[in-house]
Amino acid sequence: MEGELPSEFDLIVIGTGLTESIIAAAASRIGKNVLHADSNSYYGGLWASFTLDSISKISGSTPQSESDATKECLTFGNNNFSITNIKEEWHVSEGNIEKLNECTIEDDPQQIIENENWTKNKLLALSRKFNIDLLPKLHFARGEFVELLISSNIARYSEFRSVSRVLTWLNNKLEVVPCSRSDVFSSNNVTVVEKRMLMKLLNVCLDSTDQDFAEYENKTFHAFLKDQKLTANLIHYILYAIAMGTEKTSCRDGVERIKRFLNSLGRYGKTPFLYSMYGSGEIPQAFCRLSAVFGATYALSQSLQGVVMDDKNNYKGIMCGNQQINSSKIVIGLDKAPKAFVDHIKPLRLSRGIFITDRSLLESEKEHLSLLLFPPMNDKNPVTILEMGSLTGTCPKGLYLVHMMTDQSNNPYDDLKYYVDTLFTKSAENVNIEGGDVENRPQLLWSFYFSVPVSNDFNFQKDLPNIFVCSGPDSDLDYDPSIKIAKGIFEKMYPDSEFLPRAPDPEEIVIEGDESNENEEILQKDLDEKCKQQNKQNEITEAENNEA
Image (cartoon, rainbow, N blue to C red):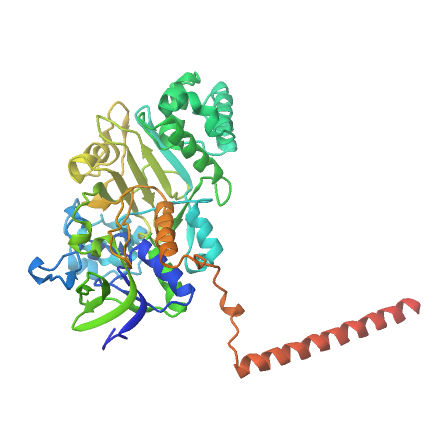
């Protein structure tokens, strides 16, 4: 935005991450004058999506020198909540640029690959066809996030696609997890006896209360499953794939996860999950669109200096370039928060890996959007894997985009190496899978590793009135924790206001005093009256014909 911004607002929101964007939308929706600003040139912060060319240029929030900070102005940015351990690898040759220039980007990549292998230059030429998430999320079909999208009418700003299959690693190979009742009874991987046992166990969990599991209060969900005399196969499906847990997951958490999974089945597809078309980075932008519709001011690529405090340590406003902008309240994204606000917090981190491959992990007749829940192997943490094809709008036709996520224990490359070596090959030749037959695994074309901070169950609020620090990404599969945090901050700021009431559709908005609207209403009344007269005449004519 060129020129100076207005100098007074009701609320200033710094950072365009998901939680900040939800709060900005909620405040704008109730009529507050909101400034939503970001030093980045893109929306989303740590929740953003990037093209293939631009993701290699990402970096964390870069705080200004501490010498720039004063008692009156606390500089934005910190090192605690930034992206680290970035490592990019190309597994294909550079390629011939002259030959590449003979092909346009609009050519069908599938036709190109039949004549020539993928190269680095060819993939980079298709860079804009990639939408690569820093932290992809799925949405439970009956989760709090989806319900908020529907109730607030924000769903109209985004498109979604159903996850078409859930996979797991069992007996040294990939297996499709039976999710619905029909899947269970049509599966060849589960015996007839196991099918009955599985349905009985799932119904017990779904209909249960906390009192039903009182004897397992201090026991694990794995112990409960073993006590039910289930087979090893069923325990694997239930514990790792449906409950998405580990042997350390408590019984209470395991049952709640089963309920969450089962309650979302059958609403939008064969699995409980939805994914945002064109990448998860579309979600913060959807809330920003709503906020802008209701009058919020948006300013990206801003020279955000810091938070201005008075001599009594009360919040006054921010410095944006050489301009001071005041507001009664401020919301700050975690990665933008001044060091003094978050220096006491040592965040957990997720090890992330993003890969481009030439085929699906488990090929079938149609393209799938797949969720693979890989159980812990070789003393490693369990890994959540998402595989996306071109129908999600995140990569070109003929390629697949694979995301891996796990709790960091060492560094992303080492944490994920076992799983990468198990599922992929770095050459086009057939290779042996450990303990299995010779198979043609997907070939890695490009790899990108990094660490992203997660803010699970941290209290970010300092004893500073009218300053609210938002959480960043978390390790949950869905956005539900972020919804709760955004709603909590909003209710602290505006306790007597409704959180994101339904926004009207464009055709429902009537502008007072608009002559075109008044004329349209008059014309509609005339048309209705003519229709009534015509219908009455038709009835008279029909009656006369019947008498004749």
